[in-house]
Structure formats: C-alpha cells, structure tokens
Length: 213
Image 1 (cartoon, rainbow, N blue to C red):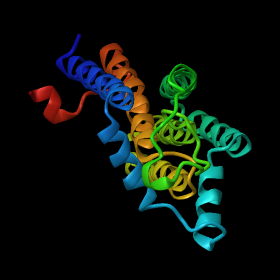
Image 2 (cartoon, rainbow, N blue to C red):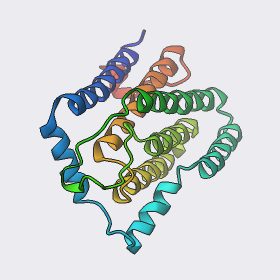
Image 3 (cartoon, rainbow, N blue to C red):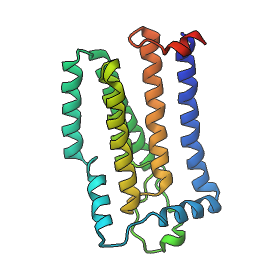
C-alpha cells in the first residue's frame, strides 16, 4: 500500500476516534454537555425571527427532495466528465456515511443536558446530525467526481453547502454543535478511506508532496 494511502487510513482512524470520543463525553461528562449546550444556546435564532426562517431554509437544503436532486445532478457531472470510478466512490461515501449516522443516532439516542437551552427547549436529540452528514458527503462526492482542474471550484461549492446546512441546523435549534462536529468526522472517516482505496488502486494520483515524502 502506498505511503499516502497508509496516511489516509490513519487519518480515517483519527476521525473515528473523534466520533467515539464525543459520544463518550456525552455519557461521561456533565461539564462537557453543559459547555455544548451553552455554546449552542449562544447561536440560536430568536423564535419566529427572520434568522430562524433562514436557518430552517438552509437546513432544508439537505432534506429528501433537495438531496435527491443534488444526487442526480452529481451523477450527471460524473458521467459528463467521464469519471465513473470516482463517481461510484463518491456514492459509496454518501451511502456509508449516512447509514453510519442513522445507525449511530438510533444507538446513541439519549437525554442530553439542556443547560441554558432550558428543560423544555424542543431541540432534536440526535448524534450525529443527519442533515450535516448528507450535505458534507454530497459535497465530498462532488469534489471527487470533478476533474482535477475543476476541483477547487467543486470544493468551494461542496464546502459552502456543508457549512450552510451545518450552521442552519444549529441556528434553527435542530442540533447541538457537537452533533454537527460528529457528522463532519463521520464523513471524514469514509472520505479518507475512499481516497486511500483510490490511491492504492491507481485511480487517484497521490499529491506530489505526499508522494515525495
């Protein structure tokens, strides 16, 4: 296995460790939960405000209908640029990352300390954030399916999409900040493994600096 691929696998393990560490903190640290609640409370939009409406709209960009539309567009891009292997790898990341998140949400569903949010605040209890996972996984797949000379633009679009949805679910009160962080690391885990496979099989040339190292 090329050295770059080994580094990517190690990076994936670090992401997995981060996801697990956050989950352990939920169960074992009231101080962490209170800090998480306080940080989230500072970002919440006022109920009924225009900011809340915009945050809801941003969050909805990763709902089923919109997500299906983006996925179809992604398939078209991959086919147009004749990158079937990269497209399939991107779809694998989308499926595996979202399946992982949904399984984790079922397994880790538990009461969270509301802290400054107030005991009656209707925040969603779900770690990691499904909407954030969907957005970042589609963004990565877009970057992966794009040709090298277009990746800078695809990366900006994918990152903007992920950050917009991630910020939306926090500001709208759907998730804690840690739910978003966990989702990003879930996507990072599968993305790093996908890149390791592509590099190992020769479909993705390793970066010049990494290859030299």
